[in-house]
Length: 263
Ligand code: HEC
Image (tube, rainbow, N blue to C red; front, side):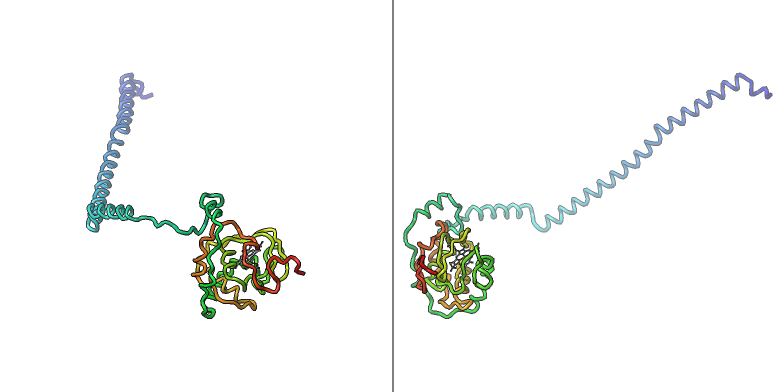
């Protein structure tokens, strides 16, 4: 046995030396390492924020070069004044009317006769361009009146060969603007369809004129063209309750309107 290893002084001092090294190492870890790391982080942040501030300055300089702050505020001031200066034009004739609204009630109360548009009739031949537009517009009607104008059973009466279609223009325009409900006799046959024809007043004057010119001159029908001026003259009809056959001028067909004795 080595006598030194059993020396109490050696054992005592080597224990405390070990303990001291352990504590010092621990301190080094706790204090020095984070301190070093922290310094690195700080250095990085400072560089990043400097770069950010530099970027911001460059951006502002670029913006200032294009428009100065004064120019921008002058622009907004002028835009605001422009908006205030605009007076909305009052609508003389509404294109769409909310049912039951005061406007609808006022329109319903006005039961004067509609203006006579026949005197506006143009003696011009049918314009092929108008027929093209009318054909495109007829997509609106096709589901109910059929692609061939022969109507659809239980949905809508025919337009091909209909005395209404080649009859007074005023009827046709008013049907477009107000819709049509109740029994109607077409080509000698009485139709009493479950659903009425709803107004198609959202169309422009040109579109209404074109689609009516189209149905008056398709599938063997032949009649004078309808002009946008005629439609415009009847815009006052929009919003009034749907028409019935009795509100219309009887067409001069083989069978008079409302003739219930037709076969
Ligand atoms: C939702 C179905 C529907 C659509 C869409 C529709 N109609 Fe009608 N149309 C009817 C019905 C139903 C009647 C008969 C109304 C009644 O008297 O009860 C009718 C009647 C008519 C009449 C008079 C009767 C006749 O057969 O001659 C004309 C003219 C007419 N429609 C034209 C048009 C035109 C033009 C369009 C497209 C812009 C159109 N309709 C779109 C359902 C429709």
